[in-house]
Image (tube, rainbow, N blue to C red; front, side, top):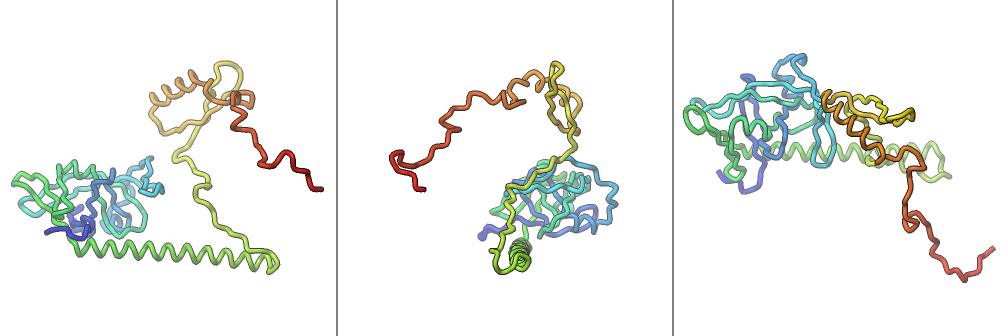
Length: 264
């Protein structure tokens, strides 16, 4: 088999004795992911999920908080050239055309080599080299579903923005111009992924307060606090600390002719 159309590498595998299709092999992913719709069909109690504090980051920078982490048996290949390993999956509740994403951690556990050109995943087994073949038809189906989801989401977003603008026109009356309610996502306030606590970095009676995370290791917290206390002079604690800014940077100049007469 030759991948002439640059299709995604999609295989099928056995997870917890269930035959699972639409498994994306992605060596660019730093995590192994199972989406919640597929996880729920395995019949596993959510109580088995372990808490994780690290969010997932997509290519466009969006952050997704996993529901938790679970370790499950994953089998690749066909008997007798079959390999089963325990894999840690992050459970993600988000829409996806795939059921599972196999990233670098699981590929390393299986010592697997993936060839997107040959649409094959090869790995060692006690009875020789095992193989998992890619499914081009399934890959194109997943790609089509991904495009469909993207178009639907874009249409819903556009319809929502039009509805908000129309509502503004009704509320403000015909005399007032419509107000654009679009919000720049870059201007949204970013929330901390963990609880913060306040520490005092001052060596004397003055308060010099800073916030640090509560989920870090105690030794790391101790070293970080000591480091911050040793370098308090690099922070601006008051307006008097903001010195040395060049007037060339902060001075505003009007681009007018100094000989021009002002108009009253």
